[in-house]
Length: 115
Image (cartoon, rainbow, N blue to C red; front, side):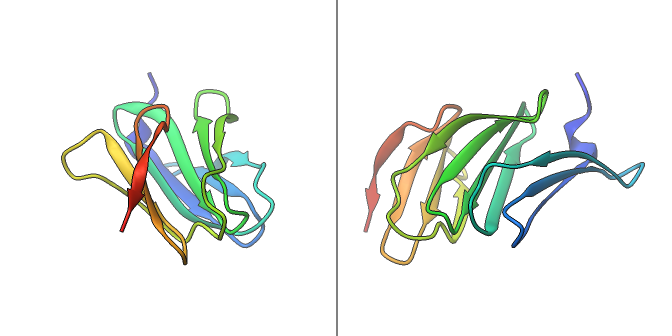
């Protein structure tokens, strides 16, 4: 398996999450599929998977082996502004202007809204 810790992930106003090889400074993938700014990105070192949050209100799960979308979550009604991994659970939270939601990993099953 490829060394995922040698990768850099960037999101941008062009609606693309780019995956870069730090050693060669070359782009490996341009993960396209969002319709607005990609403003939050994370990955887990144990899984060749990237999760992106966008102002298009969606969260996408990407398979880094192929650079393809695996799942799109449409639970938010407003822009997804931030995401963070849970420090102890196999889960993450995503935040928009009107609420914060919790999802389980690795598949992104919706858990609940957090007030």
